[in-house]
Image (cartoon, rainbow, N blue to C red):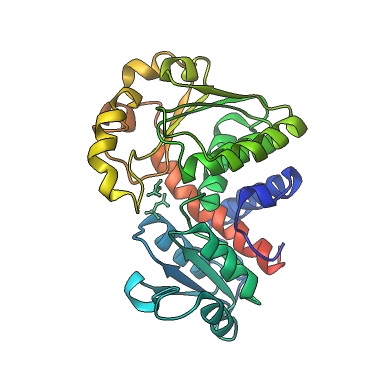
Length: 307
Ligand code: CP
Ligand code: NVA
């Protein structure tokens, strides 16, 4: 695989092997012994939207691996406006070793990959967020050993984060339940792919409107913002629809007593998640955020073909 654009592009074996590599790299880092596997390599990071985790964890990933990273802000490149994506991709291929792009339109990162000679990593699009899903799977694996047979319940908007979580769960044999309001369903093409992956892995997929139904027996409860970047004009409308989908202590009480609660962050405390849950005993929000670093190191090393 030249690029990392979607979880769906990778087989269960490839995904598991990248997760195993992330575990190994995390162990080495903990022991104080990062290997310079990407010495003198440079990652350029193109952002059309804001970021804390993706920006800093990719930058630190490159430093840990002996390389460097360049940040290109939304104002700088004018992706598809100042310059065609195909031209940007071909220019950058002569300067740096990897591209990471956070875009509005998923097709833009796909097009970038098509025109680049170097690996392109999707740092979030309107369709999916595959780097997040790798960190999510690593976090779940650390807690429960592996994903096979676990019940993962996503509560909230059927958005980009939900799509990648659905795909990594069904690829790796976890059951996936989602509770979301009408009109905020997962993308049909994401569901079609997930059904195919579930047939292969034995996962079950369940769709609910009622969050209580979705979290019954859940080992993992996952939520995300009600309004994603690029949807800001819908904020008011969404704030009316989503309150029944808040992850609070009373919802968590319906899940497995040993469940963990996850959120890709940034969190809107008091909206999709309460302080009590975000800071409570079930929360894994911060280990999950920290795992972005280790998961992305594995993605970079694998794309470079050096580990
Ligand atoms: N979860 C995540 O991608 O966070 P950022 O938007 O801060 O990068
Ligand atoms: N669904 C959110 C995730 C942010 C990391 C968004 O796209 O804004």
